[in-house]
Length: 470
Image 1 (cartoon, helix red, strand yellow):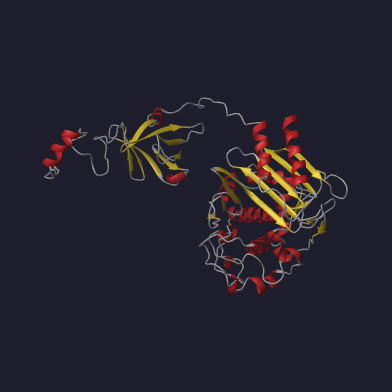
Image 2 (cartoon, rainbow, N blue to C red; image 1 turned 60 degrees about the vertical axis):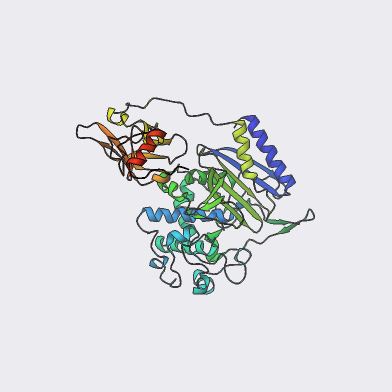
């Protein structure tokens, strides 16, 4: 970060700590998978929080659980569409799939029955089954709608333990934290760490919050970590650590599967396979928030720019809802990303492919086919219309990668002499000219061709449909 950028970020941190009355606050900015800014405000035990100071990150813990489940899937040990009972047979009351647990569409209750698990000592998984995984704890039909479930992530933690033959947190530590160098991340606090507080709503007073071991519920939100450690985790979620999680699987996790529908509110949040997804007026981002008694946290990565922000604080509530986005805004204003430089395609483009490019018509609607820097075929509408990107799968065939045409086949159809006839996209025929008579336009093209108003009148008479005159 430039000095001016860092100064502006530090001022915003100080403003947030002061005006929101947060005991301590730490934040980091991620660019190109690297931590480029670390800052803090407030005090922990009488001194500013250091880079080593742990905070509880709450439900960001769920992203670690989700990544490990996806790694098991990639190894062939888990089928996401299989019922959870295929792996945890004692959960006979559940009919949901592994994917539904990951995406909070399992229908399971949100919290445990009895005392609130976030402020009381937790029991083991057998006790959790007896109290919160009974038939009556399925409150919605699986797969029907989004319903956030902390209990569901306790089940996923147990799934990891069973399949790996070790406690879920030991698995996370060995397979993810150690390779990433996240040495200050743990399920229980290790000094130096911030104590969690509730800040009195009407006086500048603090109340210490408990931090019990949640037992079987720990996979839902018990990790302690630092802002710097979370920047390493952000790089993995962005698909930059293919040795631990492939970029393809990381991208799969951030596909929106379930919309968080709130009555009277626009659809701005959704959930993928373990990740929260955000849509701010078309600007997409992903990550996860976290809250536990005495702590708030947020990890957010922008889909388009790849820039990320991490924020952690030791207060039960009070942090501005847009604080993390404000930090990213400051970065964009001070150091906007320049566009990628233009370069010609290495190796050029075969004449057969180049012939496909240019303007095409579906009826009277115009489209342009072109190749991008990754040699992907892009379909762009001239005005309103469906668009998409396609990857070549054969000499004249392509598969859709996005939008309406994702998974659909685009074919360049040729005549017997090899010349290009038309484009077929799942039965939609695109022609070089609008309603080209030489192409197989579905339903055919009227033999009379394009007509003016007088000719149109005579045509209707020829067809036996004279227009009524007043």
